[in-house]
Image (cartoon, rainbow, N blue to C red):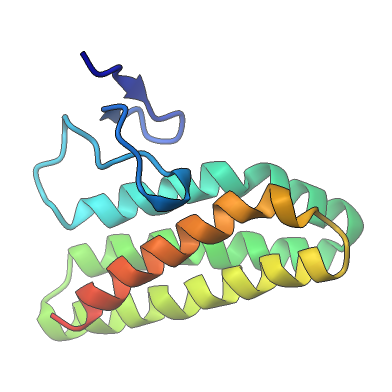
Length: 141
């Protein structure tokens, strides 16, 4: 029997299955609209990245703020896209993808500057890559 877990960010129930990068599989309950799954994934990434963002902000307030805003923008644009018509939804997914690239680069910069260890950022970076692929696909619908 698979273990059921609850997301600390969203309260959604998950099975024990995992995606690449250590992210949990899509919620089993409470998901009426399949377009909300990328939003849940984005919220999980924010939860995963929070300690890293705090560590970066202690060393470089501007980079920490930019990383925080970029991660928030990913989730907010995905949420906005799920409530828009096709053309506007594509634009929001493109905006989310741009913010995702910004967050990924900010995290890589933090590693390069030595603010956080590469190993501690690995799971977040891998999860951002997985979400990037999902958002890219949604933008091409």
